Length: 148
Image (cartoon, rainbow, N blue to C red; front, side, top):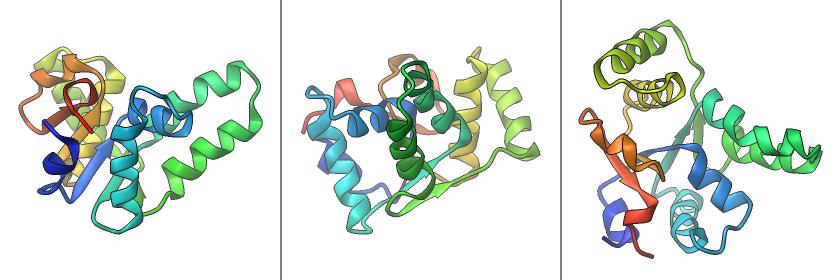
């Protein structure tokens, strides 16, 4: 499936950590795919939704390697990137995450991510975690299955 075609019907796309990491760190394998997403954000053809979980997960490696500038780049992209909505986790999301974790046996971080996407009215969830395809509440787009 070609990513540009798949995104045509998507207006609100939740970004899991992998697409953001691939974009910021310019991962050679996935950069053409994620550039398509970020180009659509720049032209207002798409709204990205992110969460504190996305931010926290993206900051782990830069903290371990003491890369202050990289931490700031991730924060800029996730919190205030072009056409990006940073959604805080509240009680409603926490409740939904608990339900999703119980129903689908998700990790807590994955449950929070999916719950945030659902609460924010996302059309799809972009990740590279194929195990999330078991979620039926939301369309899961796995980078590994997409072509540029």
